[in-house]
Length: 111
Length: 116
Image (cartoon, rainbow over all chains, first blue to last red; front, side):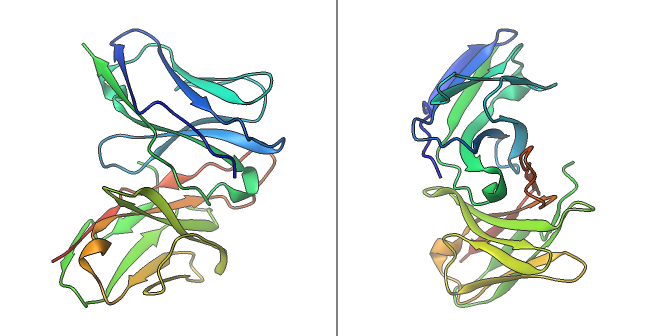
């Protein structure tokens, strides 16, 4: 499975867009990019995933570069409740569970 | 609410003891995954079961074992407990078909294990 690199922490003002980057330069053609988040010590929560096209759902948007070596998770209007650790994982869809989540990015949304 | 139920929420025990953690997956999900999260190790994949059979193994110690029962609930057994086994243990479930549209994991709220 491809390795991912994320910044350890980011701040964002409440109401502004939060853009969380992830580098996955060794991604293979059939590996998906998944994003999860973990609020305090709760169980991680699925946010979004994609293969090559940009994706949007009610929680966020996922932008994947054309060469697929990096991606950005966008929370369009961050709220205080979006403060969490965000994990970027790259996996084959059949191996979605064989994931060590790494350290992720701690996003702090400030009033 | 993810639909994944884990019991107990908290467990306090002594070194050398054995405990069992229980997980009920979301209705219809065939795959169950176990993860360990400690302060210095992050979220580590332990083991996956699919429809009663072991599917994948991660960094699971030999002192730990798991199984998935016919009703699809799963149990994680931890024996000869050490202080370092203190951690949050999460269970997750997924549909398990590994379809081409990707596989979302749904996590339970975890069991906090404290070994004293």
